[in-house]
Image (cartoon, rainbow, N blue to C red):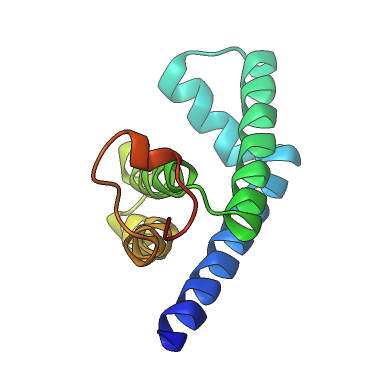
Length: 131
C-alpha cells in the first residue's frame, strides 16, 4: 500500500508539472499554439490569444487541483486534454512522432486515475482520491 501512495504522489507531481508548464507557455502566447487555434477554429488573432489565455489559466488550475486534491473528474479531464494536445500535432501537420513523444501527457493522468480508482458511476467522478 505504501508503494501505491508513493506512485500516486509521483504521478500527481508529474501532472502538476506538465499542466503548470503548459499553462505558463499558453499565458506567454506560444506562437505555434496560437496558429493552431486559428487554423482549427478560424478564430481571429485576438480571439486566439483570448482562448489561449483561458486555456493557460485552466491548465494551471488543473495542475494545482491534481497536486492538492485530485478530484477524479479533473484527473480524467487532464487525461483527455493531454491526449487532445498531443494528437493535435499530427492533425495540424506536425510529424506523428510529436504525438508519440507526448504520450506521457495523457498517460500520467490516466495512470493516476487508475491509482485513485477509476470511477464506476457519474457520482464517483466527483470523489477525491480513494473515497
